[in-house]
Every structure is written in structure tokens, then in C-alpha cells.
Amino acid sequence: MMKKITEYFVTSEAHYLNRRNFIKQSARLGVGLATFRAFSSSAEWMQGGGLSDKMISTDYGKELALNSFKEITNYNNFYEFGTSKRNPAKNAHTLKPKPWHVKVSGECLKQGDYDLEDFIAPYQLEERIYRFRCVEAWSMVIPWVGVPLASALKIFQPTSKAKYVVFKTLLDKTQMPWQNRPTLDWPYIEGLTIAEAMNPLSLLVVGLYGKTLPNQNGAPLRLVVPWKYGFKNIKSIVSIHFQETAPLNTWQGQASSEYGFYANVNPAVDHPRWSQARERIIGGGSFFSPEKRKTKLFNGYGNEVAHLYTGLDLVKNF
Amino acid sequence: MKSRIYTQGLIWLRIFNLHMVIPWQKPLLFILLLTPFLLLLSDALLGNLIDPIEEITNPTGQWALRFLLLSLLITPLNKILPFSLIKYRRMISVFSFFYACLHLSIYLIDQNFELQLVLVDVMKRPYITVGFSAFILLFLLTITSTNKMVRCLGGRWKKLHRLIYLIIILVIVHFYWQVKSSTDIEPMIYGLIALLLLGFRINWKR
Ligand code: HEM
Image (cartoon, rainbow over all chains, first blue to last red; front, side, top):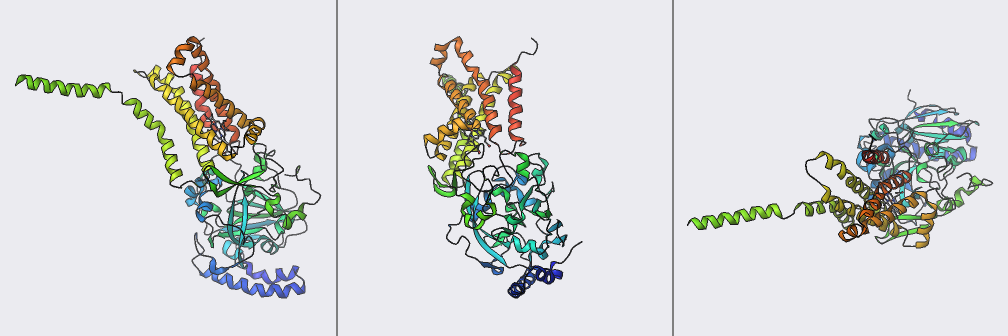
């Protein structure tokens, strides 16, 4: 069953907001609905469609030097399309990002099966420039377009039992041919604590460089949590599930000694097979002297997220 | 008149013979074995590589391994084919070493030539330890591959060069230990080919 998110949007927002916030929020709602119309009426909600007239720019990462569109879209990991970093760009044309449905289930009041356009429509799209740190010790800077995960999740009214949010990637061997191989335990699963999910940095992403997400970067909907290693940023999301117990994430299940639940960027905790102290900056330096940088705790986002982990042993809980 | 035709004929015969005599197979093989390098070089020079470190490390490692396997294939092929390929084996394995050198150089570039870091890696990371051991052994076999060395070592040469079986096992382990997912089938396929080639050498009837 498809539910239109707009039907209960007003009541649900009012439900958890206090009066003062409500007024502020209603103003935003107007913007949201306008965006909704712009979205559903336009044929641009396709791969490579422009989003620049629908998004606002933000201060996030304004000072950072961007990686090129070519680098971001031709060099990444997406094992559903192959294990080499050139594979996704070559193979992801088989993915059909439209129409797309997202199932919301578990410990929340507003469960349902949502059409992606309705799902994303109520919100103001934001452009945010984030650092991206792969667990393989390389990094990029990427201008994402998306909506704060917190605002999207609050709509579903998670209950007090919702301690974790678990995301799932599409499982479809014709659209994702490498799911025929046993490389990972498909479908890909990633989870966050509810506090991590509600952190203002967490972003539900629908685009990059002002355009809708290319297939190889996780079209049409992916997660971006920039203080964690790249593999936490699950792609092509079809399911969002609220639950009380911690999930076993895909890489954690694959090699629990190498990939923990949190996967926070941490230069002091090496991957058992390589050091995490430094990162290679893609596109930086020269052939004989590639640019390196010391990796920062929480990928440099400590001010925003360190409080989530007070009292937690980050070496044990890697 | 007759003698002119005769000498002309002789000349043609000589040219034809020359064609037969000049060994073109080895230069051709040389070019073939060099091709992956030339392609990589052109990619690098044309700026087609996004992350040169990884995009050279991986293919050069793979070509080193492939040529190692190819050199191990020569002996079984000799038993099947009516002609011998043994004269090409040395060039193939020397090329394997050549690609291993490129592979190692890129790794050293990635470590910014900080030998301290390299030593820590070799001691601490099992896949590097294993790859490093394979490289040292391969180096040993390569420098003992000249005609002079073969003559000098005599019977010991054959014994020494049996190390190739150990090398191939080390390289497969190196490959398997560096992939991100333990259920990735790629190193397993190479492993299977290596096992078949090694199995061929065991005298099963004994
Ligand atoms: C000092 C010796 C060596 C070092 C330091 C070294 C280092 C490396 C590194 C850093 C990687 C890539 C790991 C990654 O991407 O995470 C790698 C992969 C690989 N290496 Fe080596 N290696 C050495 C020797 C060798 C030798 C002698 C061979 C073969 C004859 C070899 C074959 C391979 C192969 C096949 C791969 C996998 C490539 C792929 O995933 O496509 N390595 N090695």
C-alpha cells in the first residue's frame, strides 16, 4: 500500500514539536510542500536530473576543496556492481532508480510503503559538502544533496523502543548482477543508534553536485554519516526499520574483528590489515608523491558528534 | 639467361629461409608480455587514473601472478603439444618479476619511501610479510636465471628453482589475505588454477 506522506504530515509534526518550534516549522512546511510540487511535476527526478533550483546551499564544508564529479562517480565501492572501484560506474546502468519505494517498519507509529518522491518531497533539499573517509585509507570531499535524516525519521514517529535504525539495500540480482556472487551476505544492511541517526550531521542523500545521484553512487537514496567510514553510508535504500536491539551490519558479520558496529573514523584504531593513521587524498599530490593527510578522530567532526560516545571505549567499540 | 633465373631463385629462397630462420617468436612474446605495462603507462600519462596508487598496484600484482601461473603451465603443455615451449619460459617468469617490481615500487611510493613505515608493515601485516617473502624469493630465482648462473649451479639450479612452487603459494595467500571480503571468489579462482598446476607435478601413480 502506498501512503502519501503529506496526509499526516501536519499532525505528526505538531505531535512532537512544542508550540514555539511549531511556528518555525510551519514556515518550513510551506517550503516543503512547494518543493513537493516542484518534484512530482518535474521529469527531472531521474538520473542526472538537476536539483540546483530545488536546494539551498549551507555552510557545511564551504572551506573544503572538492573532488571532481569524475573522481566521485568513477572511483568508489559498491560491491553489488563489482569489487573493483571502476566497476560501479561501468556496471550500475542496470539499476532502475525510478520508480522506487521505501518500506518503513518496526518500532514506529507510521509504518508503510512510501513512494520515494513522496518520501523526500516534504523537505527542503540542502547541499552539504562533507569529507568522505573510506575504511581503505583514502578520502575525498563530496558535495552531497539531501535532507537531514532526523527530520525524515521523526515523521514516522519512532516509539520509545526504537533504539536503532536499520537500513537495507535493494536485493535484486537482475538489477544488481554481482549479488549473484557470494562476496557479501546480501542484501547489504547498515544500522545506526537512534542518537546517531538523529544527529544533525546525518544526511539522507538524493544527489551530488546538484544532480540526482548517479546509479553507481547509490541512486536514488543513500545514507551519509561523514564521521564514520564510508561503508556505513548504505546505498540504494529500500527499507528503514526501527528496532530495540542492535543489528548485525553486513561488514560486521563478514569480519567482526575488522569492522565494528560503530565504524567511527579513528586514526588510533588500525584495521588489522592496514594502518588508519593517514589517508591518501584522491586527486592530491603527484604521481611519485601522492598527497597524504593525518586522519582525524571522527573524520574531523568531533565537535558535532563526540558527545554521542562519552564514556564509550572507542578502541573496544570500533 | 638460365643462370639469371637460377640466381634470382636462389635469392628468393634465401629471403624465405631468412624468414624462417630469424626468430620472430621471442620478440613477439616480449611485446605481448610488455603490453599490460604499456597500457598502464599510457593510462598514467593520459591522466586516466583516478587513484594511480591503487590502479597500478592491483593490475601489476595480478599480471605478476598471471605470468607466474603461465610459466608453470609450460611444463604441462610440453607433455601435450608436439613441440616444445620451454624456450619461452624464462622470459615469461622474468616478466613476472618485472611486474612484481612495479607492484612493489608503487607500494613504496604509497609509503612515501618511508622505510620505517615499510618495515612496520612487513613485520606487522601478514599479507605484506607473505608478499615480501614471495618477492625476495622471486628476486633470487630471477638473478639465478642467466645462462651463466644456470651453468654454474648445475644440478643445484633445478633444486633452487623448485622454490617457484612455494612462491606461487605465498602469492595466492598474499592475494587472499588482502581482499576485503573473505568470500570474494577472485583469489579463489587463481588459487584453484595454482592448485591444478601444482597437482600436475605430483606423481600420482607412485
Ligand atoms: C614486497 C612485496 C609486496 C608488497 C609490499 C605488496 C603489496 C601489495 C598491496 C599493498 C596490495 C594491494 C592491497 C589493497 O589494495 O588493499 C597488493 C595486492 C596484490 N599483490 Fe602484492 N605485494 C608484494 C608482492 C607481491 C608479489 C610478488 C605478487 C605476485 C607475484 C603480488 C601480487 C599481488 C596481487 C595479485 C594482488 C591483488 C591485486 C588485486 O586485488 O587486484 N604481490 N600487494
